[in-house]
Amino acid sequence: MRRDGFMTMRALTAAAMVAIVPATASAVPLAAHQAVYDLKLASQDAGIVGAEGRIAMSIKPKACDAWDLDYRFVARFQQAEEMTLTDQQTTSTESRNGSAFTFTTKTFVDGSPEKEVRGEAHHDASGTKVAMQSPEKKSFTLPLSRFPMQHTADLIQRAEAGERVFETKLFDGDDDAEKLLTSTAVITPIEAEAKDGRPIVRTALAPEIGAKLADMKSWRISESYYNSDSDDDGMPVFQTKYVLYENGVSDDLTLDFGTYAFTGSLKKLDILDAPACQ
Image (cartoon, rainbow, N blue to C red; front, side, top):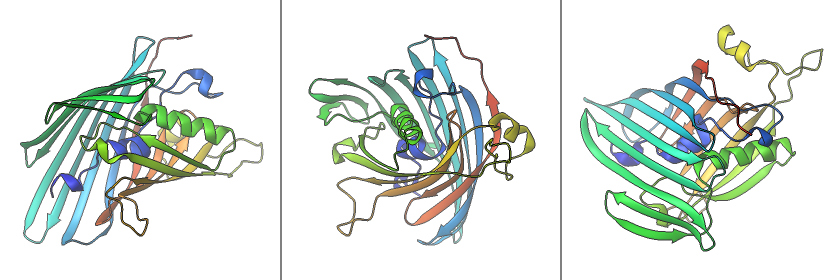
């Protein structure tokens, strides 16, 4: 299972990722936290017999001007007589105002290093300037593109405003960014309400997790990603669905890579302390 089968940063953006933005972006302060998701195979072809995975992530404040993300996705694939273990590890820092982004992603296959992607990006008047250090040094300018956390922050703001479709250009740390990644998201409110008018937390969540998400509004996000590799018939390169809570926590994931798909759920959630920032 080579790199084209791995979850890239675009999956982090739209599926398992937690949005951390200034409190003014939502009526509810968004939470720094640690989360664990268990994944199981939902559909497959290309000779995949079975697969399972886990995502572990932590988002913590870096003073009051940025957020640090540690993210790890490990998956085991069974293909006929061959078992393959993939391990993708990402660390990144994104400014709270969405203007700057640094990133390192290391990929391992069966314990051996496969690839490292490392670089930084920032916005200026001409667009989004990217400087890659690895796998090769190169610089280029993209049309103005959202970084991962700011993109999810936009989704929450637009959901709060009642918008139902949102399209934007993205830069997620991919070394093939010159293929110009774009996202189209369909936002659907989850209308389940208790008799007292307070939102109902999904019953599939463990009680100790559900208590941390009580009273939160939520939306079902269905997101499709396109670039210059997308099919002529309009099929995206990647699709995902997930539930997004107003405090930034995501759950109930579907990650569709085309030749296979994972579903996943939130298995552990720890809300972390964060400094009071103006």
